[in-house]
Image 1 (spheres, rainbow, N blue to C red):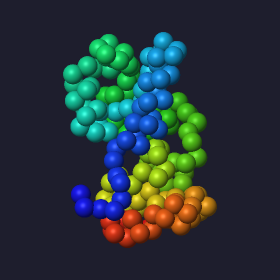
Image 2 (cartoon, rainbow, N blue to C red):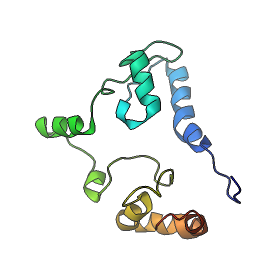
Image 3 (spheres, rainbow, N blue to C red):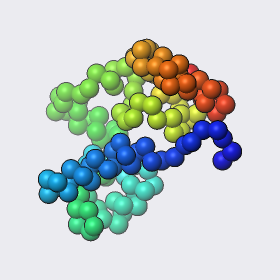
Length: 142
């Protein structure tokens, strides 16, 4: 609460949600989203309320909402689905590379993975953007 850093959830809105909403409005298309109910309590509650398809406010389909992570890996192996090489680098999820939400709980955390897989981006984040102090003050390993 008392920090010299301005932190909010607005980056998720402006970098992910707003462009998606704008595309939907401009194209008239509705999204097919690969989220799972196990990802968060908000997604779980949405799945319980709507199932895989919702038609309220924002029509959307989440066809794998009831899948688990092991279901996804089983499907990938069974059907020989090509996946991003990022998973071979130790990443379990893809998302905003610089998001530190929950990183103090992860082992290894996002920054530790980026240090190995994307050293130039790691250096830019810590040194050019000046995030070393933030990480130190918030006990985030890097």
